[in-house]
Image (cartoon, rainbow, N blue to C red; front, side):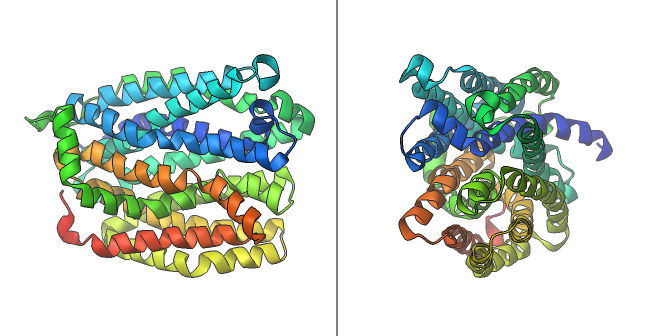
Length: 419
């Protein structure tokens, strides 16, 4: 099958990934407004932290989704599993978009929002892994890096789309109205996208690699296999830590950091986020293709070392004289590091995981990193700045994540690769 004939399946399977990333980005962008709507408090910091913690709580469900839904995909097929994850994601999105505020229904409001986030997290726990494995299994052998990179690349389109919509809303809706009801518009747009994505994904075919396998492990067998390979899953988690922390720092956290910490305008912060999304979208597939030529490890090592050395100095330079241009320069540098690392890491993860539980193992490693480190990045950064008074502390957090990635890459030798 020629590469050209596989481009449409790549777009169809990645469309759900776009929606998943879009929903999470929107919640992060409007965390302050969501906090005031569902978690009212006389303390602005407390409301924001409750909102950001709810944002992070969705990530706690991801490991469960990785195990349960990942084992389902490894047993019943890529196509049916990806349809199930999309349906769960849709229910969570609609519940958050349509829940009345605290003033209308009291404590039921934050509880419903939390449940919606947990349901989104359950679905997202296997969405990235399911899409990555599907792309790896339909890719031509010499272009796996390029094909699998579109899992992350479509996430960047979601960042761009969410930022563009945010800029339009900021220009056309007053700040007061954005806090009252304007933040719901992006979520409702996500609800409108759901039927389109569902129709695209329903037309997917099962991968030949899955059909060719005679043995598909049951749920209990999959769990036993995951327990047996716990060291590999742990190293995969450490390797994924950098990509998750970096992604949520330069996308979901940027609008909050720019407006609440650097005191730039919402328009400036969203404009930087838009540029970051475009930059990520360019670098991820380019670096994925480069990894097909030079290998995965050289890119992984280079990006982790550079991030480890430059993250805190870059943030220190930024907060010394905050401006739109400085924020843009720093975020684009981090975007290059993210793109180079992600383009090589995702395909590398599909290559090192056990074949029989590839989806579950990949998803568990990735979601543990997201649940423990990446998803709480906005909340952790906010907390670190609050307790230290040092606005450059997010750079230290990113450096720590890069150190985790470096350790994992050094331990994961090429001998681990299972093609």
